Image 1 (cartoon, rainbow, N blue to C red):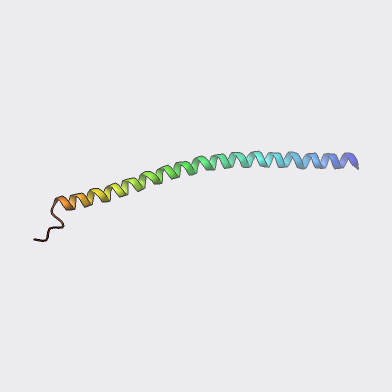
Image 2: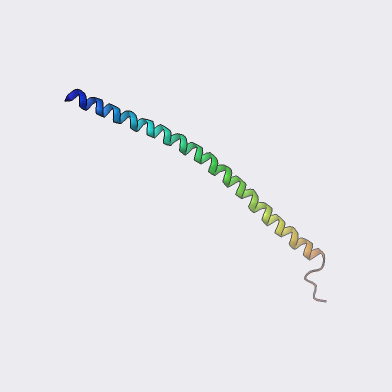
Length: 68
């Protein structure tokens, strides 16, 4: 009974360590992907804000807010 218990615990420990290693790899890959998404969104927001600023500047240069 003692040997069977030891083997059962050892098997469960190996399975838990394997799951932990796999989870770490998944977590690492997820962090890389999320970092890439964050960078892409940052540049997308910059482009949108820059485009809006340029449109406003173009509108102002054409005399868009003149009262006359």
